[in-house]
Each structure stands twice: as structure tokens, then as C-alpha cells.
Image (cartoon, helix red, strand yellow):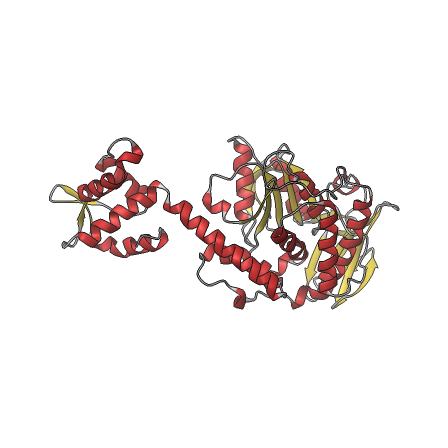
Length: 431
């Protein structure tokens, strides 16, 4: 069984996209003629529209059929063919103007979103990606933002939190592209767990999600589903997993009055404007894909590695020094916010008591009772009662990964854990 954007066909291998050597192949769709074809670029931007493409592996590639349900019903949007994109600056300006007409974004996000659109079209030139998120209450423009930004991303696939996660897995695996997910807030369920797997694995190339599928012989076999790619989501709350939270570049919606010039309903013109931009963005991909590399010089000093990891691919596309400075300033503010939130956790309070106990001790180890006393001295009022050494020991072992053992019948943290203690002091900002 062929998967990951391919399917068997009597004439050849049906594909959505392929990078083979210096050749780029992309599926295009003419909605008026209800016909698909392959746009092929072999010479750095020069292209042809073909129905069959033979590549160096010997395979003959043919386009997915126009009757495919996702294509025919507009669940997955495609370009109709490459169109000269002009310069990168002109393309970004036109994307920014398009978004400004239909969506009320904050000034910073109105600069980030066009670059994220560009990133979506060359995302496979990078190994790690951030996600984009609009977060706020209903009626604050989240869905509008998804529709406008998503309509010009690379091969966008529109879904909602009510969609079958099996369908999302299979569509991402077959079509790749950009997942546009509305109403990502879900009660705790298997569906939510599956979506979290998609988000956690989808930022890094080469981390598929393994799921058990039934083959034609009704045998159950594990299958790897590719989920790497850009994603834009809308939701009301945060994810409970702080590690997952750090993967998003977030726009908080509803924080100011709506601009008076924003149309209440999206006009039909949006679809034609979006198609014109997708066609220019396809040409941008053909011209620029093999030139794009990660630029380590844009790494922001003084912030957590995860934030740099998240933003590096986006910053690598930003040439404008003013925009780059604004994004870096935002990342520094995010760093401070994350540190502040982490500092307010029970883990930080226990870590602080541990650090104070080690720095006050003249012995090779510190007593668990001493750590407990220091914790209660500082935080008993906040917790409403003193915490026990048993609870402190659990927090040290299970939440902070600090070992304890008995010495002379008394639980202690051994001196061998001191390097971990210093690392915790840095992580939680303990002076």
C-alpha cells in the first residue's frame, strides 16, 4: 500500500508533491475545468504543467484525481498554477495587505503572519517548525483569522475539533501541507490525546506518529503517519502541557475594539484573491526552496533554548531588521513570562527550599527534614497547612528528578545531586 501523498494508479504513482534531487513537483487544481495536473520545476523557478513526470528513481508520477473528495469540496486548497511572484518584499507586502483587509490582527502579529505563510510554503527546507495560534473567547475573530491566513498557506487542510482524528491523521499523511484547526479546545478524551500527539510530533521532521491500522486481510499492523508541517489553530484556553504551549506563536484576540473597516462577512473576492496569492507563493517555492537554509546568526541570546528552537526557522526568513528586532523583543518577553509562570509553581518552591538547604549545609548531604522545614517556613501560609517530608520527597523524586536515600535511618539528598541542584537554581531563577 502506497501512502504519504502517493497512491497506486494504472498509469503511475498518484502524488500530491515530491522533492526529487533538484526537481520539485506540486499538485495544482483548476476548479473551473475540474482538472488536476502537476506543476514541475527543474531549473530553479522555470516550470511546466504536466500530466506525467518521470523522475530519477524510474517512477512515473501522475496527479491525484480531481474527483478526490477533499480537493473537489475545498477541504484542501491548491494553487491552479505558478504565477510570477515578483520580489520577496512585494509578495510579503501583498500578503500583509490581504490579511489587513479581512482580519483585525495586532501590529506585531500582522508582521509575523505573512512570514509564517512564507514559511509554510518552504517548511520542508527546515527540520523544526513553530505553530501559529489565535486564542480568545467566541466572537473575537479567531475563525476569521484562520480562514484568511489559512487560505494562502501551503496546501491548507481545514478541520475542526469535531473532526475525526483518524481523518486528520490520514489527511496529513496523504496531503501534508498546513493543518488549519478550529475549536482545538476539547474535553479530556482519546481525541484530545491524539491531537496532542500530532502537535508534539509535528514540529520536528522525522517523528511520525505510530498507529495500528487494519489491512485488507483484517490483520492489525502498526503504521507510521507523517504529521510534520505547519499548523494554525484557534482555541479559547491554553494546553495543560507547558512544553506543548511553548511551540506556539500566539495572538490574543479580543483585546481591543474591532477595526471599523473589517467586513462583517467575508466577500467572495477573498477566494479569488487567495488563489492568486497561492499561485504566486507556488512560484516562490519553486524559485527559493533550494536556496533556503537555517540561519543560526538570528538566535536570540538570553532566552530559553526551546524558544530559539521554535522561532529559528521563522526568523531565518526575516530579512527586515526592524521586523526581526520586534520578533526578538517579543521572544524576550515570552521568556520572562515563562520564567515567571515557572517560578510560581510548587516545583519551584520545592527547588528553592532544596537550593537553600544545600547552600546552608556544611555536610556532604542535606536532610529531607531540613528541606521540608525551609519549604514550610516560606510557603505554609500559601498552602494552608505544613507539607510533610513524604510530600517533599515525592516532589523531589517525581517532579524534579532529584534522588533521595536513607543515611543512618534518615532520608537525605546526597551530595552527588548537587549538579542537579545548581541546574534547578538556573531553571527556576533562584538567586
